[in-house]
Image (tube, rainbow, N blue to C red; front, side, top):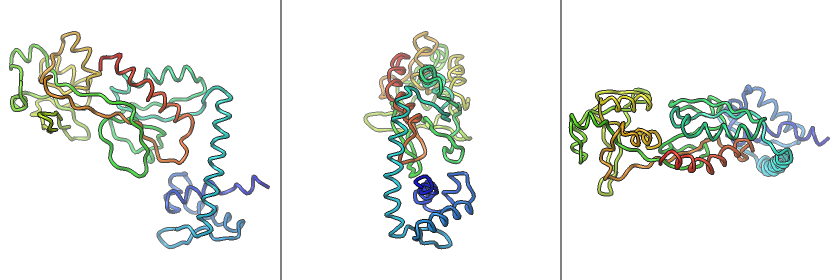
Length: 304
C-alpha cells in the first residue's frame, strides 16, 4: 500500500537534516530509541541500509542518499498539495507561536497581526512579548522578530522586514540645566539613561565623519524597559537613546528635544527568524510576507 510505504519518511528526513538520531529526537520530541526503531523498520522494509552508524554519528549510505533525494521530491509534492488546499479554502488555519520585543511588538507588530487575525479567523496567534533573546528551537517558537544585527546560525532562517533608526533626546529642563551637547566628547560628560539586558549595558552607536563609533554611556539610571527610559528622560534625568518609532510622539509634543541630530543616525535592521526548514509552513509564510509588506507602511505612519 502507498500509505504504508510512507511510514518513517518524516523521521528519516529529520535524521538526515539533523545529522544524528539524538538531534532528530530532540526536534521531533521523540526518544532516541523511537527514532532508531523507526529507521530500523524502514531499512527492513526497503531491504537496504540507509545509514552507516558509529557511536557518535550517522552518515548516509549511497542508497540512503538516493532515497533522501526522492523523499525531498515527495515532501515538496505534499507541500504543494497542502498549499493548493489552503488556497482553495481561502483562509489559513492553525497555531503560530511568535516572539517579539515588548515595545516594538506592541507599537508596530501587534496592530498588523491583529488585522491578519481578523482576515483569517482560523489562524491562532500565540504572541509572546519579551526583550529576552529566546531559543526558537528549544522553546518551540515558530517565528521571532528581532531588531539589530543577527548572529550567524545554521539552524535558523531569516528575512529582513525593514529597518528603524535611533535618536538621542532629552527634556528641555535637562538641557537648560546641563547644556546641549554638540559633539560626542561633550555627550560623554552628560548623565545617561542606559538600556540594559541580562545585566549588560547596551552601547550607544553613532556615525561621526563616516566612522561608526561605540559609546559606553556614563549611566546614572539603568533600566531594561524602553518605555521607562523614555519616561525618565521626560522627567529630566538625562539623555536617552531611543528608537525613532518610540521617540517621535514625544518629540512632536516637545516633551523631548533631539540631541546631536546633525550626526548620522544608526540604522537597526528588523528581521523575522524561524527554525530552518526546507519548506516553510504556509501559515508562517503568510505572516512573514504580511510583515514585509505592511511593516514599512506602519513605521512611516508613526513618524519614521
